[in-house]
Length: 102
Image 1: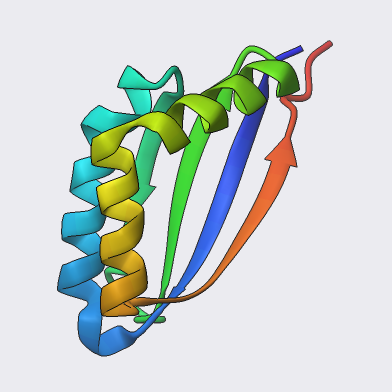
Image 2: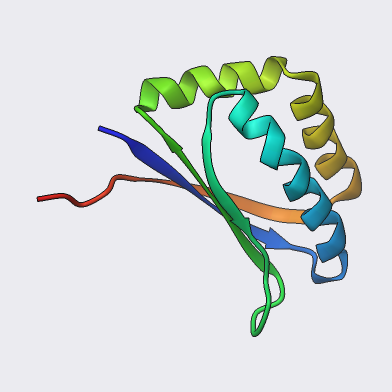
């Protein structure tokens, strides 16, 4: 069974540009580490401090292996540190979803 990780970010609305640059860096890092990146989604109209990401995996075990590779990846760790230093992400929530099929 495949899973999709739905990540909800609460952003500092005055630092959206920094979050967008952070997101763009993940576009190459995530696939390199084994995630099937569906995409990052920025606020456009309405709420200005919520963003989303969707990443799929073959299984929960594949997700765990991805997380291990991500923590060993120099670019990935640099991106995590950038977020911590610049504090543009105020909160992050992860939900694990499965697709409904017949």
